[in-house]
Image 1 (cartoon, rainbow, N blue to C red):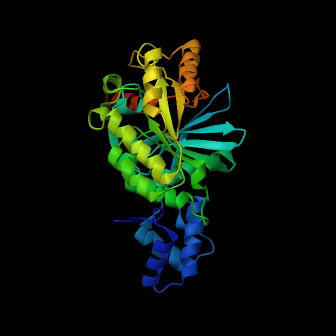
Image 2 (image 1 turned 90 degrees about the horizontal axis):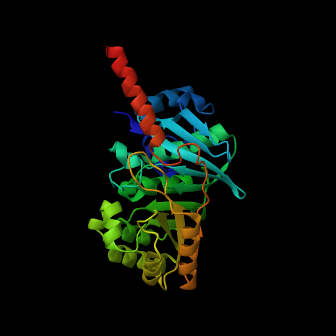
Image 3 (image 1 turned 180 degrees about the horizontal axis):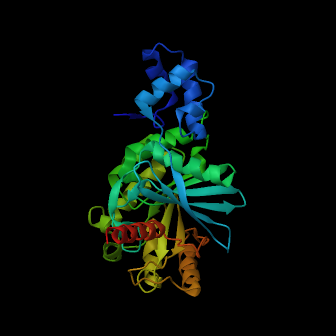
Length: 352
């Protein structure tokens, strides 16, 4: 069975090459090629042909192929559907800001968290992505855009901390100076609230931004929308977040989807402010996406402003996230669902 070479660090490649009696510089050459996003060993033109053949006998190179792209007419945001080596699909989104290009990437094929306002979970969970597949998303989109990506958000399909080891390995690879060299301060990682993994991540003391999908000020509301809350309730989650901020010195961003009539009342704002008092944090309000199959509707602009006003009066910094790509299936998971439904229908027609 072939090994995944792109998930290896430069040091690991050097160790493997030493076993073959090869010098360290050969491993560095291979590592640089992999970080550039080559899809075959034949593209590594500064390696001897014999070495390329030997590598192909032992390893495979993970890649992600663009099979569909949607470009927003409103703001130029690009949504990609990528096909992986085994035929599975993942989505990512390229966003343009004044500070450069940002990419929102996936960490799993599907998701098992079951948040009721999210499109990804409606298709179920298939598998975790490898570190090399996550890296391949960035490489594929950067190649398509023809520009350097400067910021990464792990907030696409899947729960990053549910795929902890692969995500940590990806972070190590993407921030490597010999690779894409995207610093941790330019990376955000989102979680729905896996408390044990937040505590573990705190000990890594990475300088990334941790975004916590809170979406409710209390257990009664959060239990309705986020099944994870039945294992780790709001109090346990916020205790872990306080500890994380104190350990890392990094401000936490709390994601809060504004759902009309569910979690956007004045009382909700006051309770949220009370719970977050004194924490190094920021609240990012997100008008909820319209997702087929649920009844949720986004809060009005007036309600969003009122919610922010209450938080700010209590000393909590809050903003409304800028909506990008609203005309191209902004919710992660919707494009993958549509394509897989199309493929299923096509297969059924072929059988008839």
